[in-house]
Figure 1 (cartoon, rainbow, N blue to C red):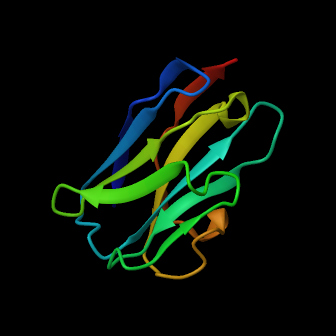
Figure 2 (figure 1 turned 135 degrees about the horizontal axis):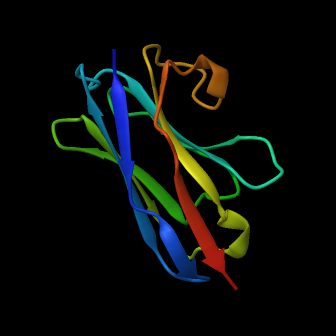
Amino acid sequence: QVQLVQSGGGLVQAGDSVRLSCVASGRTVSTYAMGWFRQAPGKEREFVAAIGGSSSNIYYADSVKGRFTISRAGAMNTVRLQMNSLKPEDTAVYYCAAKLRDTDYARGVSYNYWGKGTLVTVSS
């Protein structure tokens, strides 16, 4: 079993930067694909970014490309999401997730483990 503990987030202003972290425990996830998803109030959960088990494959949603960066750290058991140039429309609860298979990165239902979520609020 894998537990994902998230940190970071909070209330920021438009244009600011925030870094989210997600630390995995219970099992090494160095070979797992890791992803970030978000859910804004009244909206469905959407894919944000993902990094493959080897870190060679990285994907971003078009809405965050060029502003957000996903990376691994800490012997590959930590995944981070650096969010720059934040916009009010980035306001959402952000979830990290892990999956065994290194495919279907943008498909939330394919992920095996989820963090509890962290709120990021971007004021205009």
